[in-house]
Length: 481
Image (tube, rainbow, N blue to C red; front, side, top):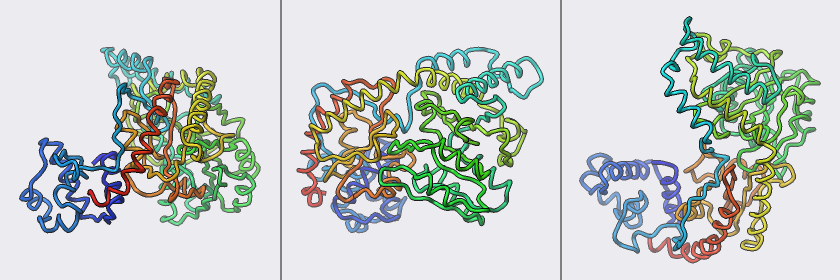
């Protein structure tokens, strides 16, 4: 099941007081897949045959048995009562598609699409960059041009850029590379890092490394002196993100870098959300390693890069043919790397103009929010925040129901990290800033290059109706479902 369907299921379970078990998920996954393949819902015999769940089991597991299973799995049913959903259906005279989830991913920009099409249409573009002939040299040169572009964006040397298959891979290489070089030691991070960092650190803890997860303040910021006090004689690495992916908080990377540099400890900054959105100069900021990702920059998915200061030594963690200076073996994604280099250059060149436009959109949004939902809250600080990010807490509303309702009118938003979509757990970031998740349902709005004032107006044209209908629907859901 995809994340939207999982969100639907969890909202139905929550609304009806149903505790989801592994057996629930097994039969829901089966019904969902069956319908997608055949465009008809499975009957009792097929359900029992493939899952072992009988008609009696279904009636015990779901409030309305098979009808609830169909509704929860998104299979159309005729009954309007049994087909109810934790969602506000709003009649739209002027429907439009509004994408406000650019912190999750960005669409390919036209220049990047054109470059990719041109690359793939070139009959000589298929060469292996490691091959010792002209075709290989052409592919090698394309990679080196992209490396130069990324280096120029960061003000570093070309040999300090390593290309990876994603931002997650870049984070893993940086952290595990330092850990492998030392064999043991202590790492300092925060409790609001992206899962690509947190899960890597948790893995290292299982192998004997000690990790300190520093708490952030209620506005999402980290106190530099807290980091300084956490450093120990055996500290081998500090991992603190440049900007948070959920609430947009920008960390004081230069101050953090200065603290680490005075102690001779490498500082790794996950800059996947920050690169191309705010100025970054790792050399001046004391950042020893920095990661970035193509699909946050209007570039292709499956591309990333890692800056490693030439004075910082890490062990290789992906072994093979020795590509990327031996740090990331594997034949390079030449087209993706080429597109990443172009997207990065364009993002940095346009950064100031785009940021100005984003801030104007944000002001317009906040003014409309104050009129429509005066008791809504903004999670995180507005002072040090990515210009296109707003994490909004809506009082008395479940975030899952709000997400589904927005989707119904063509508005794409999220509750937080795309990596955690479809779960019913409160975001670790929102927990860290002590959000009262019982009172507030959180939605993240993140603007992009093509977002317009009309897009914002469209959201607020229909938000009051959505909130009103959700308030009316929730009490009836438990009975109707």
